[in-house]
Amino acid sequence: MKRWLFALLIVMLIHGLAWQFAEVKILRAADKASLFIRGRPASQVQRLDKDGIPYQCYADGSSSYNPLFVAALALRHYRKLPDPHARKQFDLLSGWLAEHATQDETGLWFAHQEPYPKFDMQAPWYSALTQVEVLHLFALRAQESQDDLWQSLTQACARSLTPPSDIIIEEANNALWYVEYPGEAAPYTLNGHCHVLITLHEVWQISKDPIYQQLFERGHQSLVENLPRFDKNGFSLYSAEGELAGRLYHQMVIRQLASIDAIKPHPSLKKYHGRWKQRDNLPVLIQHFYNPRIKRIILFAITLISLWVLAWLFLHLIRLPLKRRR
Image 1 (cartoon, rainbow, N blue to C red):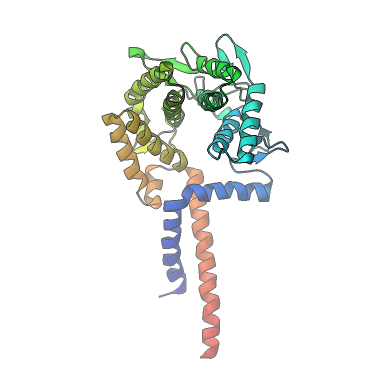
Image 2 (cartoon, rainbow, N blue to C red):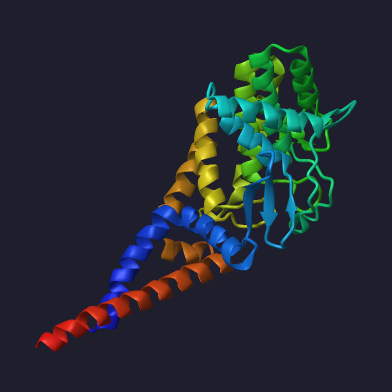
């Protein structure tokens, strides 16, 4: 068998397995490599400032503190308690969010200060996803500290997720859709709404306040009614406006549907969980035909060709000493 063909077959096997089971990690590594080589990521990466507060570095070279990721990091530290460093960071990050909030009669708000041109979002803008993540964080700190200040902040944050609100769509039959990106461009994004539902249930388990269970129930109703809008060729859409989800978000939604179905089962949740998981198990090469994402295809091709060339060179180099011995 010719060396180039043998190299191609080996690389296709290894490359296919790597992309099948580690595509998300490969893409994250590509982001970090882009930051190292070009000084900016292909999408975004997180860094810490001198005080330990996370900020995001974006593809256009800009950077910004993102309250969603600040809250997410604080929650990761909470899971490591009573570790002393985790305690320090949990208190630091939750305190930072409280200091950078704005409050009015509608609730306690956490602004995104970076524009998001993809969905025509101009700073400052607010997101149900961010609000519920901070709500979860503050509910945990209130439970742990038993401090009236944190109880008050938690209740104020909860008001922002109670209709009427700019980050909620009130639908027929009392259903609610929680909006990750308020505005006309993409008000219906699936993973954001699912995350809000799961987190509302977690906050209800912490506080036992029935308002959170009610908000979950109304959001659950909207989810099962809207799920068919998010299906295309057996793959999930990132938004109901038609954008196909990348592998990261597709896998995320599969896990989220399983979690929500465990909380409150429904046939639609099982149907789309199974359908989307089945498509995700297809070989990546076949997925490209059902879910054609240009950047994904280009990176897939570049890594395949690069490995093919390296494998051919390796086979060529080890063959030279064998020829000399003969």
